[in-house]
Length: 135
Figure 1 (cartoon, rainbow, N blue to C red):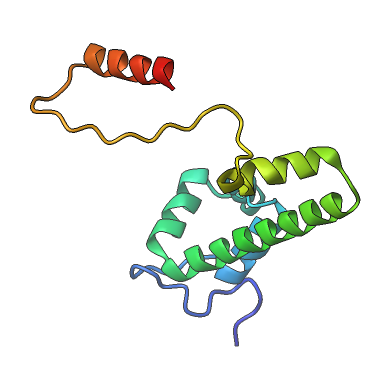
Figure 2 (cartoon, rainbow, N blue to C red):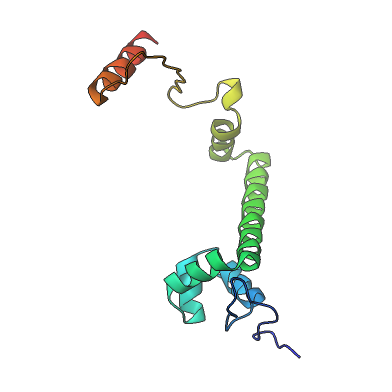
């Protein structure tokens, strides 16, 4: 019978991990999604944790789920701040989600360039500078 710290099927690319996926995900969540802090708490090298994540798709999915949950939490807190009238939160939301309505800082230039020959770095800089001056 597996305990909380004993891996069940933590095989990934063929080698079992000494720590269960669930335990790693639990520590990762507690450390705010910080891989270095998670590795330190688990008493393993950061590179080891990166390799485990890369070579164990099930572990990677669990950690992605933690990341998504933290993002959901942050978005809900942002919406709470907006509903309370927090001007900074409102401006941030408009700058990130309201771009299609003109809430942008600075200019965004999208250009398609058709050229008979490749441009040098200087020619590209001059071309962009010309666009910036024109628009």
